[in-house]
Amino acid sequence: MNVLVVDDSKFMRNIVKSYFSEIGMPCHYFEAVNGLEALKILQSTRMDLVLLDWNMPAMTGISFLKKVRAIESLKNLPIIMVTSEGAKANVIEAFKSGVSDYILKPIDGRIFKEKIKEIFG
Image (cartoon, rainbow, N blue to C red; front, side):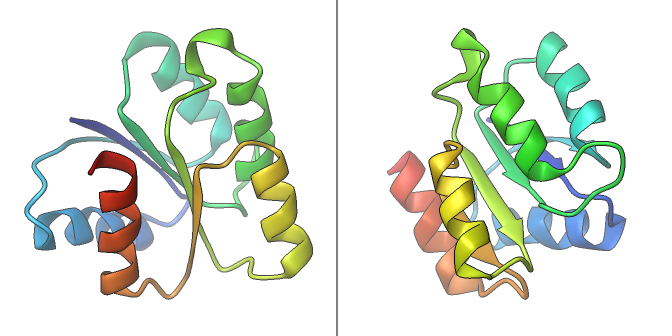
């Protein structure tokens, strides 16, 4: 399974990847520090899941999400927002923009596992 982890913090990208290891889900990871870099990766490689931060330089997570959902071939790609942006308005905006699910930082391992299972069974 190809997983794209998009976060400007290497520390957070590593934490997200470690949760996949904990649940025993083998993945090939791709990493991007912002939405622009993530879009370039999506143009060349098929992904099964994107884990996306909100606050990043160059292109925010919400801008990336809106661009991806406008691409016909990517409109059903599972995208989980993994962010510290917990304001109700932000969560609503993300779901209106087409996010598949939403996980708040700091990440709770149990919740992470549940969200991944909901997407992949």
